View (tube, rainbow, N blue to C red):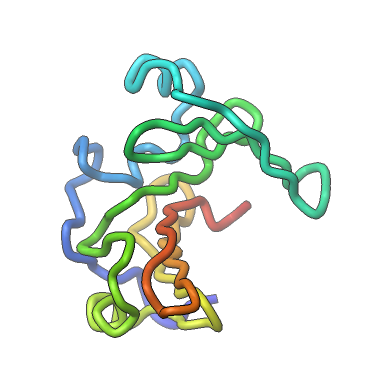
Amino acid sequence: MFAGTAISLPGWAQSGAPSDVTSLIGLTLEELFARFGFPQSVYAVRGLEAWQDDVVFIYQDRDFYIYKNRVWQVEVKNAYGIKIGDPLRNVSRTLADAAMYENYLLAPLPSRSWPLTLRVNFDHNQAVSAIFVYRSDF
């Protein structure tokens, strides 16, 4: 999907550091609750196929997408020097090697036990509307 290797992003924390969003991917429900407590709310996201359905746990500054009993995706308000509302031109400079699509971009992240990707969505004004870090092998 991507040409080249994972990019080095601003704000990339050392493996396992609390600020490292990628360290949250793969948490079990027990680990998630121990670390963040119970969610503020929970909702379901339907996929095109039944196996694509997710349960989303909402917390103050991030949302956790659960498949079976593990976190496979995290939505955050800011990461890697990018925040909700940032204009596309600023994000393009920060993520110069990312693959750009119609209304989002993808950038591979340094891998752990599985491949990881950063996805940045843009609204009709070309401003960041969502930021996700996820397992790209799903």
